[in-house]
Image (cartoon, rainbow, N blue to C red; front, side, top):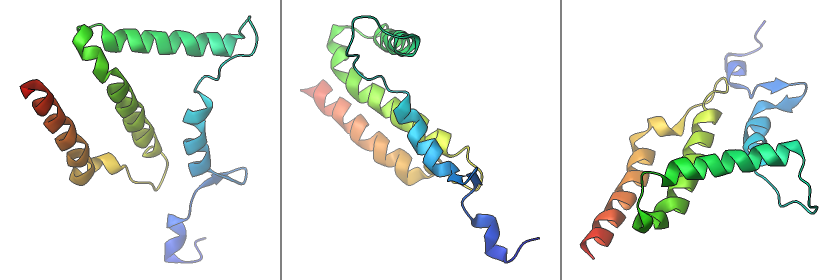
Length: 119
């Protein structure tokens, strides 16, 4: 039974942990940390393999001059994936559906490529 009309907008939780905290912390837990030993464990090996494959797939269609965009493209992709995964939580809103976020990301990147191309 609902106590008020606004209880439906309360932050969902699982085992007393807010799901938004889990959704924000999970991608950061998947980033690799530099090992302090010679032999890596399975998790670090899988993370390193995934990052190497991701970088290879990102760089394959680009020539050497396009590699300077790699950090920007990779960080933009991780940002967009994280934002869209947060939209999968119940009662949350995906910011990428708004034109303001899309144009705020698209216009500076487009303008940078045009200016660098003209230069």
